[in-house]
Image (tube, rainbow, N blue to C red; front, side, top):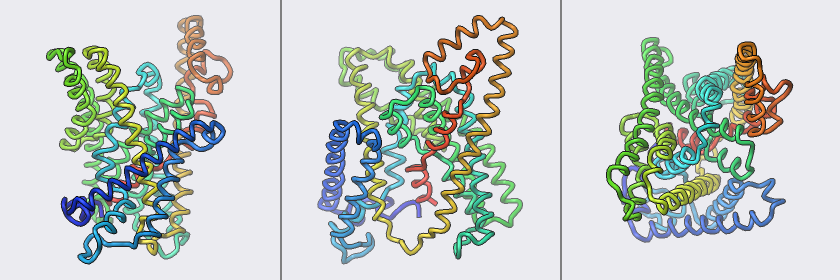
Length: 455
């Protein structure tokens, strides 16, 4: 079920008393504080930090805490009248709320990603980013679904035999990579800028594609034999995807532009606290507007961050500019830490252990690897061929001189491992090492988990 009773009915269960709320916050915030201290100690140990990123440490902390809580506190149902409020609150620490994730934690992370984005690098790789995010995600969903259907038909999943519509829905939600984990690991490792923007851009945009696919394909469940309903659902998906993609982008850019216009019209430089307070609202308001309009809040807040950096920041006072940049990064980091901590805590919070289908899980892991491979390498191959043709045309028309100079500048900005042969024809190609990293950076995380909980 997507919405739990405690999410739907405020003041019910552990939220009905100050004691329950306080106990929940004490446990969670204490774990968050402990994790931040451990992350500092991790940074003081470069050898350990080279193999264990902050995200991994946070999940380990959450998993260990989940194990201890499960040993100390007995399982308690929210609906049980005899259960102690503290026991209920302790058990709720071990759950991951999809509502909290989408509403409270995701917007600052995505907004900060757009706000810190270097537009020249993002736009330079805009074609492969959009290709991987849109076409690639659809390819991955189809490949995962077909492979799982074949393995289910062959009996590899044992007694668990889901319908094809359920497999299609699963393929859609599992094809969305997680920008949170990708960002955290890549920022820590300080990877090559081009690889960073390829992964970040694809991760953020394909979340929107995955969510639209998930919402559309979930309508097929229960209507496998109804041709009319299947056809309507397909047409609805095409319309929804077009409207959501274009509408979310336009709303994000418009929101950033309007925030700049307001700050320019209402000069608040003399009251920087009010100015900063108003500016901080941009991190959430467009996201909720998009959700009300049934658009993609993720895409909206990403492009809002990009446009706010371009149109709003020049109209801020210097002190607000410095504080806003720091606050956006701090809020994003705390949200990332909270998400990974919640993921770790949910490991031993799963009550229905008897419903685990390990054969299907193994098949799904294999299908995800193959689906991700079918996403990355064919698109990279086609993009490289188009890039070759474009560069040959540019060389034949311009003699190759200016283009070679541009290529040398590009090589200075990017890692040498992404290029091979003549620099004039390979300056923007996706090399084998880049493709390998894109393949294995397709981590599934909180977005897929939240979608699964809403299904």
